[in-house]
Length: 180
Image (cartoon, rainbow, N blue to C red; front, side, top):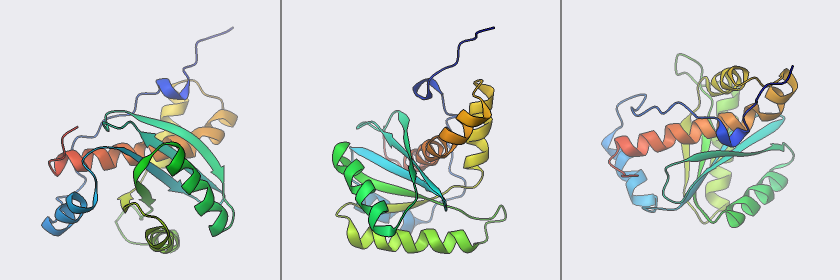
């Protein structure tokens, strides 16, 4: 029996048009000051073995899962990220910030914060953090619902999670008054 299975481009992410919390005035002003009005944004879902990558269009309307990178050294990760930034003409980078469900930090949170500092010092574009709680779970749920096999889910989960992280960040921008 054959059935239609959509490509990753055809997966529709749930649009979350509300912020997960009320943004502080300082946070809003910082983002509005650092982020260009238009242009592509790249997002990373950073894990210990893999890094999921997604990008939005220049008008920040649609989000597309791109690739899952194998995790290596910091230099390799930076090189791979810089290549994608150049290839897609990216104006900002968003890193998923892994928090516990209750909002507390864990070991992986500290790791991503270190990478955030490294990226901020190494790149000429602004770098932001976005809460990524339950994004891998949601990515897996979306892929299962679309009929992907376990092997395909494992191969694409991180990049779909990166797309969800980016969609959440774009929703946050809309809540701050950034039109798109």
